[in-house]
Length: 462
Ligand code: HEC
Image (tube, rainbow, N blue to C red; front, side, top):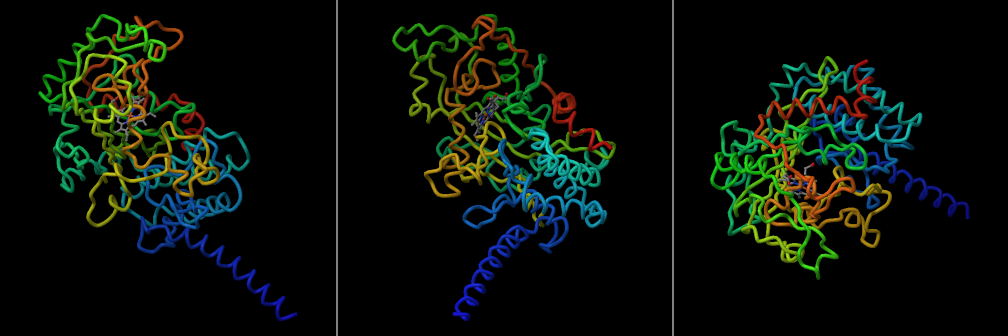
C-alpha cells in the first residue's frame, strides 16, 4: 500500500515537473532570435512578452507580426505570465541588458515589440499589475532607445526583400496567387504614387484606438499604380478630387434596394484592370530623447491587384462568389529570424499562411483562453481564416475603386453613409500625391495626440 502511495506521489510529481518544464522550456525554447543561446537575456525578454503556450502544449508567437494579445486578454496581467514578464524586464533594467547586444537593428526590433505590448496595455483597465508592467516596459524601452540618427540609418526590410529577389517583381495574371513583390514602391518619381490627404490622416481605420486595433504604433502608407504608369495615376487622383457629384447613389432597382440601398455612382473615375494598390505598414520607434520617430523598417505590405474590368455598378457586384474573381490578394510580413539572420530576406510572403487574427479589426476574445470558433480544435478554432489571403475579401469584395476602403462610405465592402451625412455629402476627397516624409510626419503627429501616447509617453520619457 505504502509503495502504491509512494508511486502515486512520484507520478504526480513527475506530471507536475513535466508540465512545468515543458511550459518553462516551451517559453525559453522560443527560437533564438537575438542570440544563439536560447537563455540569453534578450531571448528571454522576447519569449516572456511574445510567446504563448497553447492548450495543445505548443509554443506560438515566436516570430509573428504582432503579439498574441487581444482586447480581452488577461495574459501578462496575472499569474505566471505576469511574474515572468516582470522578472525578466526587471533583470534587464538591473543588469543594463542593452549593453549585451550592440546591433541597432536588434535594439529597434525588441523596442518595437515591447512598445506594441505597452500600447495594448494602455487600452486595459487600470490595475496594479498593469501599472507595474507598464513601468517595467517603459524602463526597458528607454534603455533600448536609439538616437534619431541611428533610427534613420536602420535598414528597410522592403528594400532588403527587393534586393533578395526571392519572389518575382511582376504580377502574373495567369497565376494570380503566384507570389510577387513590386519594386520601386517608395521611388518618389517611380510608377507608384504615394497617396496623402489634405483633410486628415491616411488609413485612419487602421490607426483608430477605440475598438479597431491595440497596435497603433505604425505609419501606414497607401500606394497606387495604374497600369499606364505614374502620369495616369496622378491624373486619376485629380479626376477624383474634382469629381463634384455624389459618390453614392440610391440603388435604382426596386427589388434589390431593400438589401442594397446604395450603389457607387457610375460616373466616378475608375481603375482599369491590372491596377495595383498597396497598404504598407512601417514601424514607429521611441528615440533616446523620448520622441516618436518613423523608422525605415517595413513591417508588412498588403497588396491588391485588379483582375477584372470595372462593371457598371449593380447589386450583382455584391454576390460574394462572383466577387472572388475581382482581386488577387497578397500579404508580406517581416520576420525577426529573416531580418536578423545571416542572409536577410526582409519580408516573407505570408498570403497562404494560416495564422491567428490579431490587431486591426480582430475579435476581442483572447484566442488562447476563448476560441472564436469553439467547435474546432486549437489552434484552428482560434484562426478564423483558412489563410491570410482568405481574410481580405470580407472587406474588399467589390471590383476596382469600389473596394478602395480609404473612401469614406466605401468601407469594409459595404456602401454606407454615416447617420449624420447624406450620400451627397460623401466626397469630394482630398487625396493628393504625397511624399513618404509627409506621410510619416502626419502619422507621428497624430500618434503624439492619441490617448495611448498620452498615457505611455510620459512613462517612456521619464
Ligand atoms: C476588416 C476589414 C479589412 C480586412 C479583412 C482587410 N482590409 Fe484592407 N483595408 C481596410 C480598410 C478599412 C482600409 C482603408 C484604410 C484605413 O482607413 O485604414 C483598407 C485598406 C487597404 C489597402 C489600401 C487601399 C484601400 O483600399 O484603401 C490595401 C492595399 C488593402 N487594404 C489590402 C488588403 C489585403 C491584401 C487584405 C488581406 C490580407 C486586407 N486588405 C484585409 C479593411 C480591411
